[in-house]
Structure formats: structure tokens, C-alpha cells
Image (cartoon, rainbow, N blue to C red; front, top):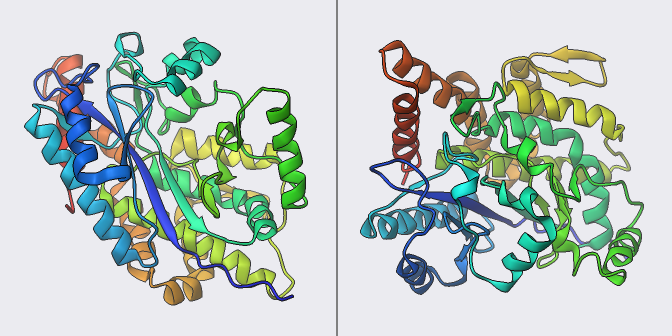
Length: 378
């Protein structure tokens, strides 16, 4: 029986911080009425996160980039307005410039209480926000097969998304410090290679049956088969501060999967490289973002990101055209020219310091910029 083509439907989850516009610090105990009103207006598309200072949104299943854009605009705008009504502001960044994790409180729910008990200080330090992109791939074996191939390209996406250069008031020197915090959790990083969906399920069940995890949702890999939906869920990237950048990351990921599937129909596949090599590119993206290039394992040398992006855009051009993603994927060149959120945050901080502001005041300027930038395009 011939395999049915995937739908390549798309959905995005984003996590946001709630901040006090006066102190610019995280709102460690926001009013319960805020979440109640958000649930009333957005239903299941909004949910609490582990920390009270965070909110998570999830779009509906979308079949076009315009639908996804409209969903994200509605969700960001609604939460921004509700937060403002309660004297708070929303920022889309993967770390807060100076917040202290010791001051944060986790949401009062059984699931989060269990996670806090299981993971202790590791999860209490998790003052980070991420972005997850779901792409519909309905065939189980195909989903696992493409998972093994797509990991090669995930560092390319990470480099375009970075938004977490600061941690506890320090410029870390990394463009995505979020990943350094996140990797302290168990079951993170690049997934193992599986020959079939059945093999993947056997490995998951080995942990479920021993009582280690309840289900595959406790596998916090950089990409994973979703437990709830017939999708392949990408989780490596930082959250993008600008909505337009979020759409670009989502579109690129969608088109990459389409490109790999197109090759598969010709009995071709992307070469699988060792996790040691993929991890090296992941580190380079985490450390340098767009600045120092990534390793091309076909040429065995470091290539400037601009060249890699040009090659990638050429490879996925037929997919971007077919899926109606051309505008969004081409926006990657704009990100490259102006820099990611991390690049811009560092620039804002350095300008404030050069003007004679004190360290903390300069970091407050970064928060102010994040509040404004998170609303661009709404």
C-alpha cells in the first residue's frame, strides 16, 4: 500500500514571560484573574507553565502560513492586552536579562508539583522560555525516519532564533544560554536514531513500564514525535522576540521536512552524521549565533552562515513555493542582516553602558526593548 503524502500542517507553541513594567523584573506571583481571563477568551490555546511568571500559547492546526500568522497575532495581542489590564507586560525571549530563579514560584498544579519533586533544583532553575513547532506527518514510521534526518538542520534554525544572551544579570557570551540551562534536565538533546516507529515505542515503553516516566511527553529532546498529535515537534530553538521571525523559523522547519520527504520519494535520504558532530554545530549556534558559521560535514570545513543559508534556501525553494512559505523563508535573510534578538539585546545593553548608565539600568533598557519588540507585527 502506497504511503499517503503528509499534510505538512503546522502549529506553534510559544512561552512568554510576564514582567512588571516598573521594576522590569519577572512577575513571580501574577494575579490568578489574569490566567482566568486568558482562558475565558482563548480557551485551550493558552495554559500556565511550570513557573507562575510564564504563560504558554498553542495555535490551532494550520494549513497555511497566513492562518498561522493570524493565530499568533490573535494570541500575542490578546495576552498582551490582558496582561496590561493587570498592570503587567509580556516579553518573548528565552531568558530574562536579570531575573533570579530563587525568587520564582512554580504553578500550583499536581503535574508541576511532581516535576518539582522529581527534578529538584534542576527544574527550579528553569527560568527559560522556548518555542515548539509542530508539522503534520501522519505516518508513524515516516515521522521517526524524518526525525533522524532533520537533526542535521536544527543548529541552522537555532542560530536564526537566539534570544537568550543574559542570565541573572550577566552577559553570558552565549547567544542561547537557554540551552545550557535546559540540558541539565534528563532526556534532553538530540534523540537517538530509531529504525522504525515500533523501535521508538519499545524504548519509550522501557521507561514507562519501569515507572520512570508516564509517557513520551517526558522526553524533552530537540525534536520528538508528539505524544498528543501526529506531528514531528521541533524544540531546539529559542523563542523569537518578533512574530515575523517566529513565522520564519516555522516555515523553514516545515519546508526542510518537505524537502527530505521529496528526496525520500526518489529513494534518497540525507546522510546521518554522528551526534558528536551535530552537537558541535549545535554548540556553535548556541555560542556564536550567526557570527562564526557552522561546519559543513560534506566539505569538512566551517562555512559562513550566509553561504549556508543561501544553499539551504535554494534546496527548499520548490517546497516553499508549493507550501506558500516563500515570503517567510526569505525573511531569514533579513534576520541575518539585522541580527537576532540576542544580537540586538547585546547592542541595546552596550549602548546604554556607553551612555554612562549603570549595569542594572542598562539591563532594564533591554527589558523595555523586549516589551516593545514583542509587539512588532501585531
